[in-house]
Image (cartoon, rainbow, N blue to C red):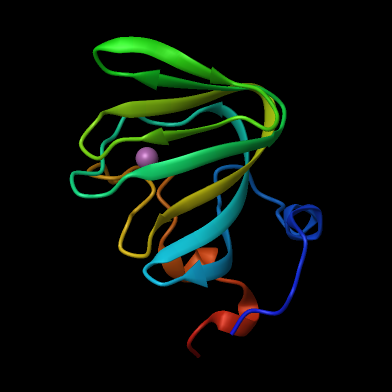
Length: 128
Ligand code: NI
């Protein structure tokens, strides 16, 4: 069980860009926070939708076959399953993510930016 917390306190624990921190679980979904800077990597999640909710900064989500989505603080967007996407943060962005527990954040792509779920879980939630 996760303790009560705040989004801002959890974001304060994040020290690395593109390294989500799991802050809760709702059924089969993880709630995460992350800090983004620069360009991520094009990828897709064949069977999983992915929610991006901007807390601070301005996030561009490039999407295959359609215009990019630009998210300002308070705005969110769900990338539909199967759609190739690439998040880009021209300056630092803080976000909340909601994604299925089985989702790998780089999707079908294994990349130097891929962070295994074990490293996204807070210390007190990791299996030893
Ligand atoms: Ni994704």
